[in-house]
Structure formats: structure tokens, C-alpha cells
Image 1 (cartoon, helix red, strand yellow):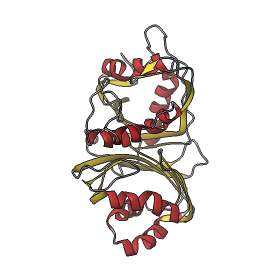
Image 2 (cartoon, one colour):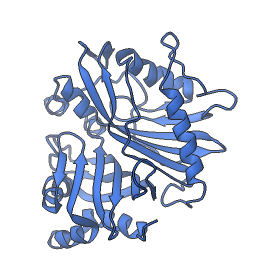
Image 3 (cartoon, helix red, strand yellow):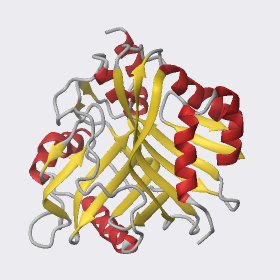
Image 4 (cartoon, rainbow, N blue to C red):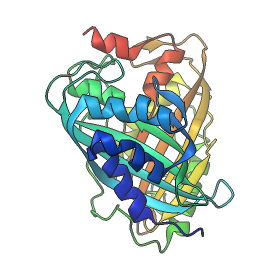
Length: 329
């Protein structure tokens, strides 16, 4: 493994929100390669180089969220099983503060908000970040402001809790490979399902991948669920009914550390829209979906799963601008 300091990188990411504006360039240069490439959820999308990261991601965040604080719930690091063994960091964090100015077209409400963000960061040979993928949950931000353009018909829409065990930040690294093995086994079996019952082999029951009391924390537009039957009822059946040919697993990164694992694809899923979903009816559109999944495992089963999906980009492919719709509410 390359010699790098995940604690320094985590501290540096938090510092980007609170450092004086005059020192921002210095902080960025210490943390990121000059040629860093960052992919962010729509409408930000690809940013190339330090100036673009500063001007199109960090400066808007700092201007929009007064007194912004970074609050990490999960922050892990490990070598990437899907790449060439290069180190990656993965995080679930909330940026908390007062929503004082518009952010990427979303009007401010002047109140406390918690903007959840999923992050994957690739570390380069000199210990600085060379690339990253970020999904700020803009649908949930609009929900917090009373401007969600999607119907509230699925799971429970709420601010995400951190891990029940409160040990998701730089956990002890032992057993990370086994944790990732468990998650990969679940994903492999989840691919196939019975079109009548929507069930996949091995997911539940004796020796199943998921704990009986599992939690599934979904993004804005879907919400969160409890137990596997709740996951089926409040997310999976609706999703598979609308996108029955979905194929996933096109991941650029898979890492495991301790009892935690994280996987992501950009995009991960390809599918055609063949049903009705969140008030929208499909006409066979070919769609892709950017995905991030974070897992906590315990006693050989998955206990908790946090999921970020770029639904602003997904609905853009359907011909809808959810941010503009929310702004008009």
C-alpha cells in the first residue's frame, strides 16, 4: 500500500469549508493534484483542475451555506479492488449550516440544513487526491426547503443517521476484505430476480446476506426503509417494475475497511424506462444511473446500507429539470 495519511486528507477536506478565503488556494494545492478531475452530480458534472474545483464546487458551497461544518458519519480508506490497487477514500458526510444563498439553482430558505454528500477520492503517488466522484443529495436538500418536485410515495424521507455502532470514521482495518467479499456476493445474487415476486436468491432467511433488522437509507425521492420486506415494499419493487432490465455493477471503485465497504459506478446502472416511477411514465428511454453504496456489516450479514443516487441526472435523461421544478414551487 502507498504511504499516505487518511487522517490528514480527512482534516483537509473539512478545512476547505472553514478556512479563510485568502488561504483557500493554498489549502486546495496541499490536498489535490494540480490536474485533479472531479465528477459531481448534475448540474455540476465534470470539473478539471484546481480552479474549476474551487470556482464551481467549493466557492458555491461556501457562499450558500453559512457557518458550514462537515460532519462525517463514514470515512474509510483501502486499496481499490476494481482498479490497480490504488488507494481510495470513501465517505458519507453532511454539510450542515444555514442555507443563506442559492446553490446550483436551488433557492435558499434561510434555515439550518443538512446536505448529505457521498464521496469517493482516489489518492495519487504523492499522497494528494488525483480524482473524485461526489453525489450531493440535491433532491433531499429541496425536500428540506419544502421544494421537492417528486411525490413522497415510497420510504421515510428524513436526515440520515450515522452507523448504529458509531465507529464509521477511520475504523480498524482488519476484516475489510471479508466485508467486501460479503457485499460483492450480495450484489452478484441481487442481479437476478423472479419477475413475479421480485425476489433474489440468498438475500434473506437462514444464511442470507441481510440481517433481519437491516436498515436501508435511501436518497431524496425514495427515502429510508426498515427490514428487507420494507426495502422491497418501499423501494425495490417500484424500481424493478419501472426498470425491469436494469443492469448494475459497472463499478470504478470497491473498497472494504473493518466492518465497512463502499462501492460506486459512474454510471453503475443501465436500463430502459418501461413503467411508471415517482409520477413519471416511461416510453422505453435508455437511461444510466450514477450510484454510491456504503455498507456496515455485522456477524456475517449486512446491517446498514446508505445509498446515494444522482436522481437529478436520471430525471434529466427523462426530459425533466427537477431543480427548476423545485425552484418554482
